[in-house]
Length: 305
Length: 278
Image (cartoon, rainbow over all chains, first blue to last red):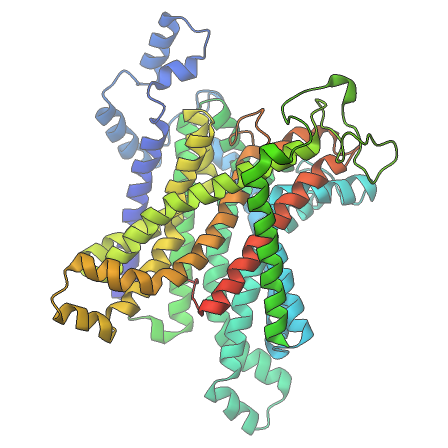
């Protein structure tokens, strides 16, 4: 178990270091950052001042080492536009994104676990096929478009839910549903496949032979084994949701981290952009590591991997 | 029964994809009007199923008086072009990495696995937005950026299928016959994993089309005045509460096209018995 843990941590650190490099390279792609920050009407003096103020007059290698050494210590620099520490900016916006991501994940699990289990129990029936059709439809749905449709129907025509903002918990329902849509197909399919596999196994036959009730077999024996891959994918999906919430935050004007990144890209505020990419990647890596460890705890067979 | 149901779904997918390909290829001959010509006197005309429609414009006009049907057909062309190009770029990258990792193994495979892990940790939409935002939006930049970001499923599937094929008897026979490494890869391994890769390619086209629409919707994808479906939805957003059809029409097209591609992909997967899960 310890070796497994160390291996995972080393890989995670290497991934974080690579992302740090990629985020730096990405923001330097445009060539001269100072010119693009200053805008089209800037004088040469303005550009020089900006270059000096943001350390862009240093050689690229020096800038890179500076970014890496500071970011490793948790110092993500200052935002040009907001005139604030990037870390405090992200800290302010993170609760909105986290709330959205967790709401999305909860909704996705609440929908896909029962659907997947029922589809497995009723394998090859009309219900099973209907669930698969729903998964296909969900997969093809453009999330931003679904968001707009929900806004028209539930926000404007029915007037049940607020269209934008983060004033109350109701504000998170529509964005949460939209975000859940991206995860429901994968989670449902996985639950169904896991349950079908578990239901065909020897220990279920034993449980049946013992005369246990159907509910007990399904929920206690089969689900516990089918849940292993679902737990892992749920953690990974949460990572994807936090990264993908940028589109939904924009649609519903939720001022989370994704919205911050979008504003910063539009304003060429590169310290914020590279920091958000790094933070989201680190969260994702952390979540996958958590998923691996949960899996190892739930299923001892995986520990040697 | 089940087989028949699956077949129908695959055929529906094939028909949708075929129609979209036809629209994409022959867009200039199909459109009733030029998709870029503005007519401010005919703004936001309603489509044919509503009252007060203009027979000249079957699906109405947008906020600048441009014919909606013409823009839709050109939008289909853009979606298909992006989907196919991105898939080719990401396919070349992903298949090369996956096949090399799976075939050679050892250190090379470790590096490939690490690259896949790193790529999965990057938030795709955000990185694509940032790159397009910094380099300026154009079709070429968009296609290259997405191509460089979406290779991981190709790599995962190419790697795992290569590993299976590598140990089969006909590959051993080719080694014994003295075939070169390249000959074995190109002549024995690739043809035998091709069916799996075709399935991944269809799913990838669908994903690329959805991502392009999302990026264009956020204003950092296909640049205006090009009629990308995502961009059409973004431009129509201000009018959606009064005339919902302006976002319904391009959205439904996007949804149906992606659904069609996925149906076709699923059908191919069943036909080939291919695996696409990591």
